[in-house]
Length: 334
Ligand code: NAD
Image 1 (cartoon, rainbow, N blue to C red):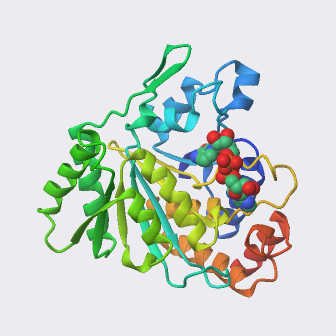
Image 2: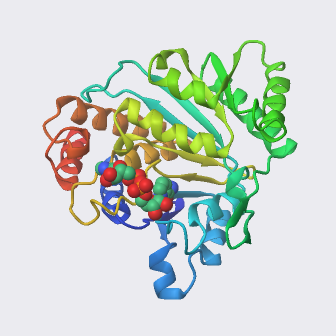
């Protein structure tokens, strides 16, 4: 029987890169049954809901989802559908690998980082209000249970993926209670994993160290906001948002795979979006679905096309379209 997954093509460049990823998955010999759903601005226009309850119900039912980026209005408008999805599905652990790909010129070679981001609380809990016309307040909520859960997840990930070091990232010198609690939970968990080196760093220092000596880092364990920001920084270090994949894992086996990048309104509809980040997110998904052989084949085909450099998209220095890049990857799969 075909495996069923939920597919959310998303907004902006989402549908263009989703089309590419689906063609590539099919060309690798995998026939999945896609339950296609809409969320975000487009869904709101059609149904009045940004996150229809069937989307959450279907992901709960089918357990696995592949998702394109979804636009979130800045400053005003509806709450982030991405944040709501992670929260409602309790997808507490985001994993975002950042590794150089041969063929993309970057400041450093051989960067190989994984960001593990707590996905359910911190400033993303959306506890915000206007105290009066001139004063706004956002609450940074960190709990022991969520911090212990993500710390355990990060160390377990390190062990299972042959990683050597976990560095916890906080601003515990200033946010003594909230980040202090996150740090305490990481320290406590580290004691259970003597085989994994444990380090602590303040977020400001990390930002400097990452652009000077990124090889010092392996797994970065971050609360939600720092994890979000550092993911883009790490993507920039290794070739940009066009290539950075992500996965979100929950407690009950639900998993949602999506690129780190957003809907890129500046290039949407131009046919030049780089589908690599979504394809690499799909590779993470295929591994999760036990299609390891096919996942490795796709990964290798993408890497070869990028290394050869003849059919790469403008964001990584080429002048090919999304479709030309996709055809080149498919040719490598033949
Ligand atoms: P963005 O990631 O969409 O774009 C940042 C820059 O990177 C743009 O110049 C864009 O063209 C480029 N870029 C990103 N992905 C690319 C790709 N695949 N190929 C080529 N170039 C690429 O960030 P933004 O502009 O700050 O956000 C746009 C919207 O996306 C916002 O509404 C934001 O809330 C949303 N967003 C969604 C997600 C998600 O769905 N998980 C993540 C981040 C941002």
